[in-house]
Length: 292
Image 1 (tube, rainbow, N blue to C red):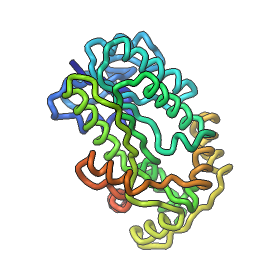
Image 2: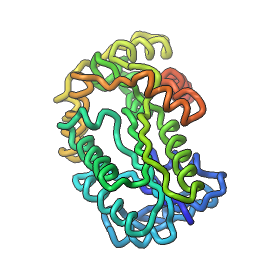
Image 3: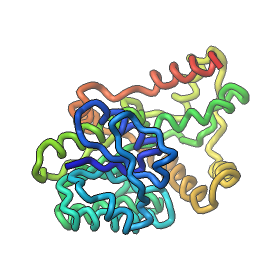
Image 4: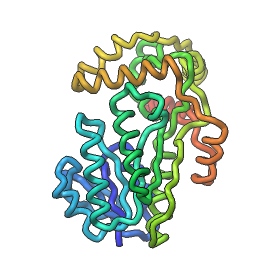
């Protein structure tokens, strides 16, 4: 039998495939364009799209374990639920679903609410799944390069409550470990839930101070302007997505998204090491920027 990874060419899917590589499992990667995809040796590209349920049914043939990552799209909920139903019909015995940290609390954020609904389906039908709930991705801040180096400011309006940002490598590693555990079990295992979080409660002030130290010059904070964020995002993406992101950042400003000690301990046990820190990311990013 085989593992099928959806979202295989995206930020998280590529990390999952990286950590699956070399473990001897039959791994298939769902992609709309197999001819353009570049996967590690031994990964089989399978043509398909979560928006095309017939292609999903075909891709699930011979699959025992599924990594389900639904895109942030207007029909994200429909795509995820159809894929889960198709997996049930195909006899898939293990599922790893990528949800979101604080999904239940952020009921007014569309892509959070859709993931919570998928979690409810998993619970209602007692599906043999691991639910991974990642916080805001640390690597999103690679987009801060121009603001940090050119403007001398940290530009994401994260506010003062704190966000336990997570390294995408920890997401990929956690996903791969759970996929392999479920695949190797050969029979359905009980549901598990992991909060995928980082060790630091990052705020506007802590991020400005950290970047000032790493870059060796004063770095300020661009402020909590959510309307400005929405307008910037609309300049290179759809309006609905820009508004969705604005709503998410509003909740970060109002409530924060800080992990508990128990969250961190449970994730550490899964990974076999402490979650990667923002400082490690920032130092590596700054070194890469310096090299040009």
